[in-house]
Image: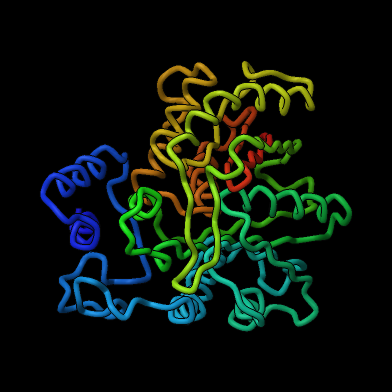
Length: 342
């Protein structure tokens, strides 16, 4: 609700609009979010990033936002990587590094910063996935999985780092209000290996599909004042209409059906998105519980979010008979994967 007060100060010109925003925040299914910027829960007199004026003039430029990204993203990434490796894997043994982000970019970029901070091997294979949005973690999984299948000695480190709150926009449009309601900052890392004897999630297959009629309903574009999100209210309707068919096609590839899925690892793009999936798949109560929990605790972290859901599910280990993962992004693109524990 501290964030709501900040947004009301910027967006709400009158009391009816302020009441509407309070209602939206109460109904969002989000209790808290995190940001690398401290301004969002402080009075104007204590703002450090935004100008201490109600109209936020002079408004932060893209260059200023990227300066914060350049400083904060590597630190957050390294914390996530160390949490992932947890002293069980030597950083020097990592053969491949895949960085994922749609909220900042530069060259030299995040991959080189992480390599230096962790003193990774200078001959490490590096690649970056940029600007693909919320489904990018699954795209990274695809690449990492292909590498591990080609070389069983591979150890592929994937890190998704998103500083979404850097891109706050002050114009009172529904896209901006929705974005400022949903998104938070965070990072998540995972390690893929070619070692078949290691305990963990084993990836079965991938499936992706474009929903062309949603092409302009979810978009992410550069501007001089930061990255700008388009997120129309039709996205949940499009997902509800098409998701069940997409799941059917994905599961047909591995000769199974929805009845075999024990865990639904779904990207919580928002409360309405999860409700749409619940209706589309005709799920019973509780099957999207973990996704709702992540949304409540962190908000939407773009590409990192589905890894937060996966981490919670991995604590259940042997009960994961078949996991179905899905995330959504610009296009409208739906990326999915299936996995099991062994």
